[in-house]
Image 1 (spheres, each protein chain N blue to C red):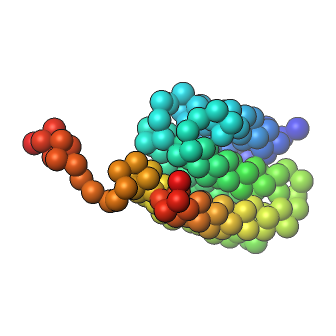
Image 2 (cartoon, rainbow over the protein chains, first blue to last red):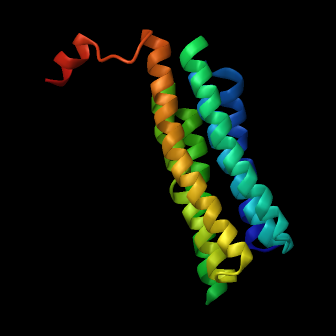
Length: 83
Length: 106
């Protein structure tokens, strides 16, 4: 187990508090938790790409980063108009 | 030496990201939590990209990690503002500064 694995595991563990917030807090806080979870997932994939020496996982991290930004903006717009 | 430097960058990223997640958990409302969301999109992605570049130089994984960090940095700033604005509009019905807030600031 090298440093990249440790980092990936730590980043995944960081998602647990976000799940708690997403399950219990108000709607704005849930959106914030979703946004941070997207960052965590993206960085986890980048670390796993290095850990497994497979650069294709970095592509997944990049795609997740782009999609999490778009998703967050969409939800924010929805929150502003309808919630 | 390269490996030690990469591990140091990774350690910085881990600490900052986990602290940001715990901050999101501990804070009382969405506005306070946004501060920690912003922190999670700045230092962590840059540190991870720096770790990858340290180990891989500017080969394919390094460039992709840099692009990912740039997307997370710029997108994080956008998201923080958009979420704060959405919360404010959702709370008050429109994008407005209240008289009480102007008085409190002056």
